[in-house]
Length: 183
Image 1 (cartoon, rainbow, N blue to C red):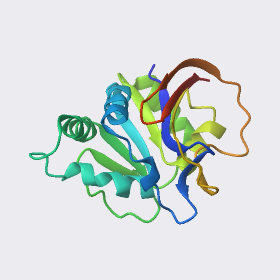
Image 2: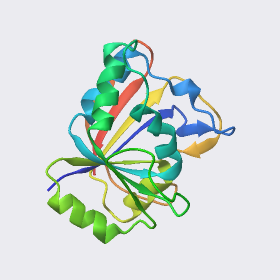
Image 3: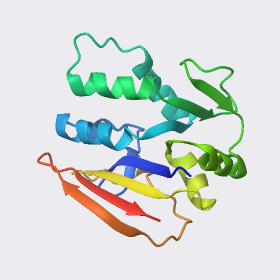
Image 4: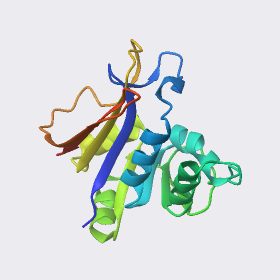
């Protein structure tokens, strides 16, 4: 059985985007990006909300010739993974290996976890909140940026109480901190 992993880059005060919808303050440097690549290397399928999918779809077509190795590596990981996008507004995917689902179905995700050979990752705070509420998330990776943004979209749901086991942490020279928990 595969694990369902939620990973997010967030401000120290717990936001994935600020009140203006921006997240440029969370741009990872090479060291953090390389670390994220290694975290995501075991992921076979991504579950995305529409907004995050539309943001990440650039990885399908970004020209790689002039990019550093860690950027090429991430693009290849993303392109080689399956993607399920939960959206009521998208008519069709804009990337390969992608399908659209209209509604999040916790039982379908449980079956997917049972049948998968590789881990799954859930992306997008609202979709992840549904997965947390359904008891589907097995691991949580928070990469905390050294910034306070004071408000915006929270990385974690407000209405979920869940004991977590800290299984790892790492500090980066840039001030980012990685926290790894199991549910």
